[in-house]
Length: 304
Image (tube, rainbow, N blue to C red):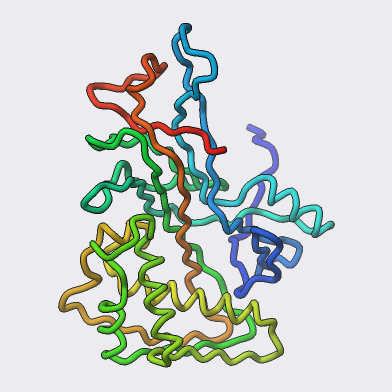
């Protein structure tokens, strides 16, 4: 049986740091194919799907909508990259599926309204359909996902280290649990604490480049190191968790923050993408087209 031509897709291995940053996206060179570029959008995107309401809906009333959050490369940015790089193919970064969480603020901290895994593919999406907690009628909500890809370090080496005292100090400085900002992810809280120690020379990151690199490249390498450190400190906690949901980073667990990356090494490209939206209990809207069961489900108002 003739099944037509078979397309062989080369593995996506990106060179780190990125080739160039344009607006809200980064463009990476593919290590295995010079004619292919990989694009990543730095900001998460929100899309909404309208509910159909009852016929007696009041004029001007805003319809409640469920939230679909995209954490990957968007079509608009991808087309823009194609225009900027004529003659080269651009594809979105193929992130591994990662944990996402959605939460709202409560008097004693935060409450998770949904959790799960992003849908793997060109567009990493998380459809938020969690249970609205009692006592929260209309509130700003936050969703965040942790995504991981791997790239090859190109033209530089990195050494990073921290003393045991500095590691303990991160736990003291990081604003977690009751001290956390309710919108902050665990990644944000830990990276801010690491940045504070780095400014005070309590941590060391050394980058050696074989040829001159723009300052942007060094900034990106620092991001790679900081996110890897945050991942090690967080242990079993996903970095996309709300910081208010984590009381402490670790107990008696030994954490090694020493990093030795050389040019050509396969290194993790780790990001946490947060996005905010307005939540509203869907039972306020009388008739929805899909079943709610016995509990109100989280929907959302489209952002202006």
